[in-house]
Image (spheres, rainbow, N blue to C red):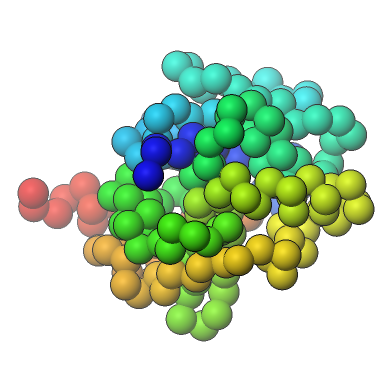
Length: 205
């Protein structure tokens, strides 16, 4: 399978967080930089998806701006990335998943069905994570149609797609198997994440 184009979704306003999450610094890098670094080994190229008024820039990567009007959420970022990626599939990672790394994304790709429109991880309790997944080119019409119908929730598109859900439990995740898909929507969501990162840094090998 040809390598997908990586897409860092960093166009949100960060209303619940208090500032745009793509610009948040963690261990010396912005969350957008960390997401781009996680995608790069699995992708032919990586795009940074940003809002029209965003000042976020990640050195070394191309940026793609959501089409107006603003505020249409991740689907607008997906649509813009499809337009900019010349027929490629998209490996998508929202910037607020700081614990997702390149080996984990590689395992997700290996576990995915080749004929599915969307390959994404799901937790044992049934929580889907469509913003950490492979969006194939065949999903583009459903994304475009949803925006045309003013449907902005990513989950509203899922019934229109052939979705392959990969159980997160089968993907490599040490040393935090239960928290790899933890995302940061509010400042308090960082609690405990730094401890896991420190454990990884200190692990042998």
